[in-house]
Each structure stands twice: as structure tokens, then as C-alpha cells.
Image (cartoon, rainbow, N blue to C red; front, side, top):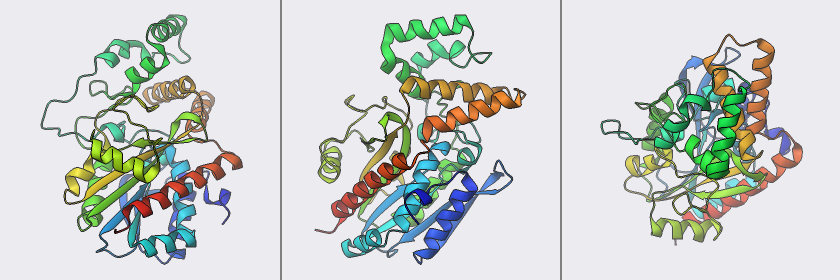
Length: 361
């Protein structure tokens, strides 16, 4: 397949391409079936293919669709790398096993939602739920109007939005919305009050594949922040100086961090990658989120607001629902050949760099 042909127009098509690429590479696939069905009645699953020995001391994990609809990008990257014989050979030469985990959130992928079927943001859902959850005073302040009663927002809501942005800036607005909250289950960036199905599945996959390695790398594929087509390499570990130094040695000094404010992402809570420390405690862990830009951040946030309004109003007119869904997909997936080609080129570079970083010295 060409690079462009690795991408799909629907979850079911993406899944079949992933399964076919894994078979073409001679890899077995383990499927974790989701309890719900997809938009077209299809089976939903998180599919896992492993390249390399189960006992490899170095393991690179490549994941897609943590945020469902972002899977259009991540799946295309995974299919391309599976079909890339030179990449597979490089992994074997370096003694690194590669774990392809397709569609962490298959429900959101199929239904064109960023969240899981529980309306949970998977990357805000990794907490010890036996302990008090983080407060979200910034979200509390905007909760009454950020997902309004009507869409498009009325004049009062629009004025509140503009006033907030004027006072706190776009970055402040983004942070208030996206940092994570646990009080509004029908709101945005809801972290949940217990582990989601996808959370439990991620942990199971890490336990099955990551407990025999000494070095663990992770590239989690995302979209929706930054300049169009640019893949920001966002540090995806604890706030640890040694791990950040290692990440920058692997992926370059332009690796950004949510901890020091250098990333386009806000400081987040309940991060998925922290599960690596809990489920693979024996391994030295190094990871990044590869975050590809699509549209300006306010357009992305408005697409999310509209989609949550639609989720809260399932009786909305069919034509309005269609428009909102298309806006959401466009906010997280740029369906052009040029965008897809630059996405894959950057992902391949980052993946090869990770193979080198994980190589036994």
C-alpha cells in the first residue's frame, strides 16, 4: 500500500487494514472485544500485534485512538509501519520488540467521539479511585455555559466565552476546559469516577506484554493541537528530570513538557502513560505523545463543545447532527494526501529514534 492507502474513512475499514497489515507481516493478533457495537453495528475491539520475542529486554509500544476519533490518524500510522519491511528489520536488528495496540478507544473511533462510551476522556482516567480525586476550580467556573443548553450558543454564552478568553487568553481557556474534571459526567474532558473499559484493557495489555522487559518506550499518537501537520513530541512520563533527559536524547531537544509549560498541551491530570510505572514497574520507562496539529485551538474546542451538546441532545435534527460530527472529525483528522504523508514521515522518524534509544548498549 501507498502511505495514503494506509488511512481509512471508518473504524471498520481501519480495523480491517490493521488486521491485514499484521497478517502481512506474519504477526498474530490478540483482540480485546468491547461490550458495545459500532456505529454501523460492527464489532469493536482493541487489537494487539507484537513484533519480536516475548522475552525481549526492550519493548516499544505504539498506540492509537486513546481519544477515539484521533484514531483516523493513529491507525494510518500503525498500518504504514506494519507494512514497512525496513522498519520491521530495524527493530529486529536493534533487538527491540514492537507492540502495536490499535484503537485503545474503539467506541470513540467508530462513533466519531473523542471520549469512551462512558463519556470519559481516557487520558484523564488513570487515578487511584480509592483516594480523593483532583478538584477542577477553573472548569467549575465555566461549567454552567461551556456546554450550553442550545447550539449554536446564544448571545449570552458567546459573550461569556469572549470575556473569558479576553481575561485569561486562549491558553487559559484551553487549560480550564481540558485539564480534566470529575464532577460533570455530561461535560467536557470528564475523567470519570472509576476505571473505564479502555483503562482496564490498557492495563491488561501492559501486564501481558510489558512485565518481562527492562526498557520500555511508548509513542502514543494524538491529534488536535498545534500547527497543521506538525508532530509535537510531548514528554509522556512523570515529572522526572532523568526521564526527560532520556526522552530528549532519543527524540531531540525540542521534546516539550506539560510540566514546564513548553507544550501546546495544558497541565493534565489522570494521564494514561502513568500506568506504565504501575503495570511494568521493573522497566525503565521513556515515552512521548506525538501530537499532530489540525485546526486552530479555538476551532477544536468549539467542535468538542458542539459534539458534547449533541451527545446531551440525541433528539437533535439529523442534519445538524451530521454537520457537528463532520466538524468534529475535521478537528482531529485532516483528510488530505499531503497531511497523511507528513504524519507518517514524522511518526516513522520518531519510531526509528525510539528503536535506537532502546537498543541494548
